[in-house]
Image (cartoon, rainbow, N blue to C red):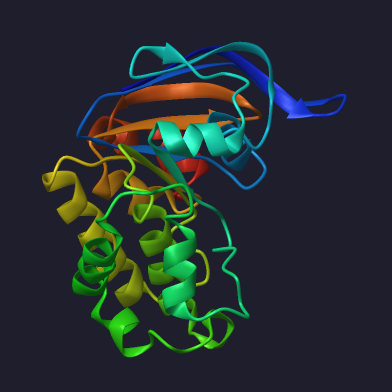
Length: 233
């Protein structure tokens, strides 16, 4: 579904990503892990059109989308749940969910709202509450729900567990697992290496803007370098 080849990107003259290559197959969860500042968020932002690459290819379902605008990327079927949630705090939960469907003109929006409420019953209870007053876990539910309202084929989730209690993270991971079982393809970016790799099919480790290790998630988790550098084992 996604084939990134030789990708370079950064901000102005500051290059952050160097010759990144990775593959995401349809219907799998791929974890992208690494230390803070390694380039994980920049990679997602480049895939989703928020950062323009300086070199390389981003093939999505066989089409090179490198350099596309974010709006065009969303319309093509990629939805990005950003680090820190980035909700519209002065809008209600329902309005935030509707913002995720801004490019849609089909008649299925009301039904998809109900689907999000089924995935996250707490959001139904908070439907008319301002998003800025939600708890951290509820905000993450709303951010994921907003991303799903775009009806993506590929969901990019940046730092799912940031600032959340372990029990909430478990609940969110269970939702992502259920989405995968329905055919959703997911890229999960996480600083918590163990959380990410235990939930994924395959994993990539990014260090200093370069991919340093790739493989089945269990193999990456068991790698001596990963255990020493990221798990302290």
